[in-house]
Length: 357
Image (tube, rainbow, N blue to C red; front, side, top):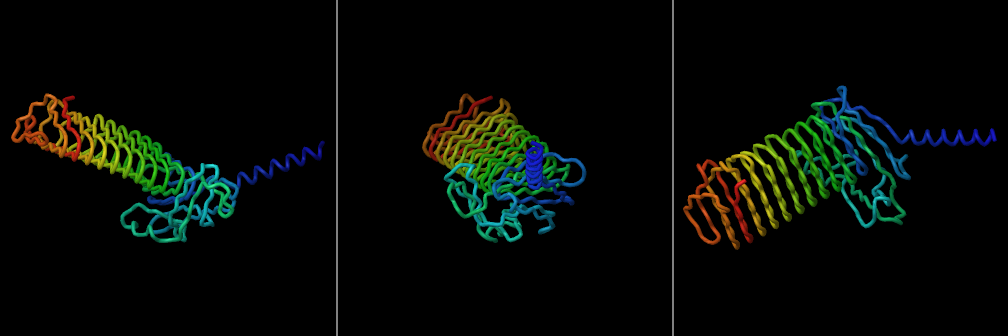
């Protein structure tokens, strides 16, 4: 019994040692840092002290093969999780999906800044797949937690997984190939870019830019100088968004904006309905859809030079008092209120409805 107990204790100690070996913590000094990880969960939160701290939890059957490298690259202090294979297997994440991206020899990839955009074709090709039964490949991933002190400039790059950013103040860039991204209570400049995935933002103070190649965008509680929401295919929902410049665009999908305000606002969709409620006076509003209806609600004291053009559709002014200069079935020009701003609505095929709040 004593021998058996000793063996059990030894086994537990060995397992504990192995588990501990999969976790590591790294300090990144300097005001500008970048983190790169191909697969896993990314969590970004407020940190204390003067340095960015990154905690890595390596997981999967081949977790021990993952390597973490740090050091300056292209003017930033970096942390890179190195995957020593061109095929990464994720059988527990579902089947029938593949994501391919190019990774440089130093473990970096992506980089969403304009000066580095041309580097997206550099490096070797890495395929991340959920296909079961694959014999060749690396079954490993890393969950990353980044603690960011106030005022840092941080670029976060993820291939596949999920990303969460909470209660961070600074210049934050999140660039992912295929992942959903959720942010909450950010302050400063926030830029999120995903090739495929949904983006959910709640409460942001500062400039905001959210973009996805394919996926929905939901944003609420924003105040800053610039707000930009773009998706190639998906629905955009904005509530309580206030900015000097507001730009909302989807290639295919509906746009719904409630309690929106700004000096210059633009809402565009190639195919889909647009429903916008403005709560304050504006300098310029442009709404355009290739195919779909437009509903625009304006405040009681709104004033603008109005130009509404529908290629095929009706125009309903909803009881607004408009001094008309030109009117036909599909085209209206006139002045609303004191005419201080500009209001342009254009639809290739669809109706236009104006209403007062």
